[in-house]
Image (tube, rainbow, N blue to C red; front, side):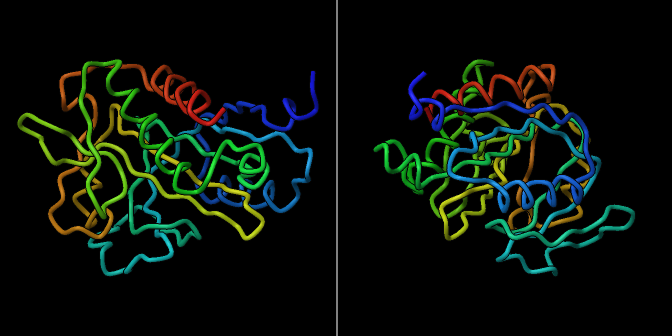
Length: 218
């Protein structure tokens, strides 16, 4: 295999359910220790209930945390919720290496993530849309039109290496979203695929999302 092909390949790591704080530190450690030849990795995970704050987050948007921990992170964006029944994919990439191969720029990186979510939803006959100035994917039509179904937030270090990623709501207890202003928007409805009439296995959806991401980012 050509060394350039090796450099641009992916390793897919299935972490299953893992404490968010532990996973967060693992992502930071991997990114700090990686070298020029380290393969990019895609982590498929789920988390016990947790609220996370992005760098732009106002803690006041966490309205009623009660028994759910709140963790400050270094990703972009505002506050969101992670919990069982959510397909979470973290992207540990070297954008500069991919950029040198005329493959990827930061804006294209974000667009690729969004397109991958849209393609995943389409496979279940669901239509999502983007909203200008509001990162993530939203329901396009029907009773839940405008509701958020996927959140994204990434960290790009000065050396071009990324971590964090995207979370697609599949089959969740949605009540914790009512305890925050999701992504800083008071009253924003948050839904999952089940609320839209789709019964799907979370692991299957997570793998489909990862496959779509790899296709877009290859």
